[in-house]
Length: 235
Image 1 (cartoon, helix red, strand yellow):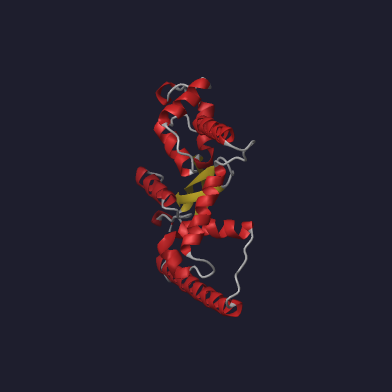
Image 2 (cartoon, rainbow, N blue to C red):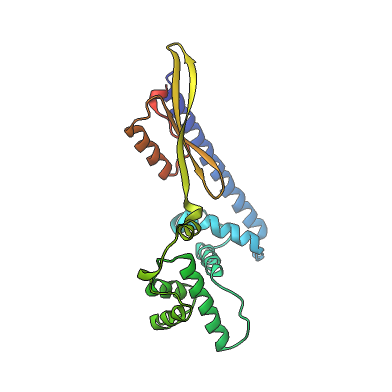
């Protein structure tokens, strides 16, 4: 009988080869399309640029230089920076300097509301990232006029904390399954996490011995981005 570890290794090797073949095919297909396109300029809509920007940012510049064919890596990363900037950018209500001041005021208040621990320097840096150079004293004056104290004096409620970190919060627990084996009735312990925002459940690992070592290893797999892990004690 072939050991499970060998079967898993063979399966992973096959998947890796298949993935490389798919990438090679897609790259060749892109080259063919580029030849057909010739010198004509490829026009992309906002949705297509957004999808390329999000996926391209995950790959980083080095990988983009190797795989990007439609546009340059600099263009893809610029699109991503524009997506980030749009999050904090509002349409001006009126032209001229007063509109700029109003926009900065709204941004500063929103930033400190969403992130109560941010101080004046942190807000100043965030505003600079979206094209606004503002002095710390100006930020302090804006927040003081709104009755918002400095970062060290701001109370952070549990509700505020949850609202600020909700996309990153998860819950974890075990559930048990009774399985009849040649050794009799055996209890298996499965650890899972649930993303509070999306309600997506992810199984992290399963074992007959839910000790500290298993939990530590399961959490390592989870934080490494691996969706599933296997405990040798299951086999």
